[in-house]
Image 1 (cartoon, rainbow, N blue to C red):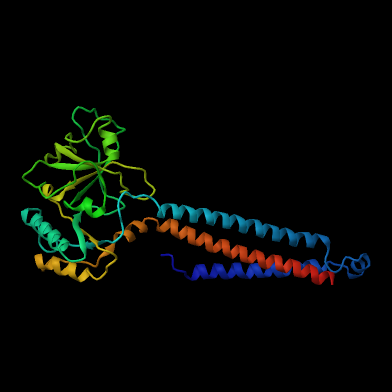
Image 2: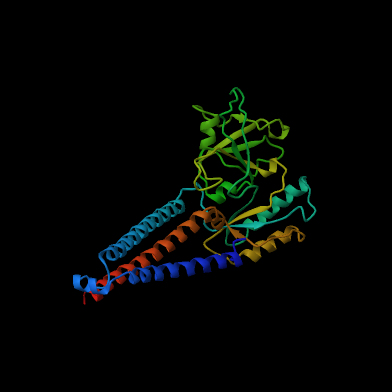
Length: 344
């Protein structure tokens, strides 16, 4: 809880009172030790040279610190701008995420669950103004990781973890992730066909160095469901955890071959239309009126939300830098005005 409380208010009050007292009493005590007759005879006015140098030194320190704060703020802003322009490998615009809870509707991991997801994807994709729809296991910012095992390739402790995502057949088209080699996932990748995967360039480099991964296979752990997965396509590298991460191995699998609850429905809208939320809800309820549907979030907001800390630091540093510069200007004006008045 970061809300101000009595301790914070009390501390702020004490610091403010002490600041006022020190700022006002210090020159007052200095003035009590000043001999007016000797000062006037020497032509030095009411204030000695030492105080004049002190005031100038304080202003110099103010200006220096404010410039440091402004320079730091500019660096934070530049870093934030760089994060905003990072190539994620996918198109985050005009993509909404609708949360659907099949568990609350009484579904189990069986053929009925898969039939429901397929029908929802087809019905939502058929809505005018919608380009593509796909269920997704992981959205952005984290997910399921595990190293892969490639036949004929010895295991190593240096093998990187692979981020795994179970998606619908239209996911890669929806996210506009380009296929570099092979093909994308398709509706024919179902429970009756051989289990397949589409991997990113980073995974191809890490687990299939020097050879084409198309047609080769890999496995995950000892689970029989995740053995002998054939690579049918290679995509461009994508950001999967955060905007600062380097290219990490990622693999995509069709949900028709892996029974699992997927609670996120990605929908790509044509243009920036926000009037489709109710139509998407109606399409889902046309398949099963008992399915709970939550309000849609924006994928762009989810991705940008991973930079909340950086954005907050940039905003605070900018605000404090401008405040320090403003106070420095007041200090310079005060010193110059005082010098003119003193000389007069």
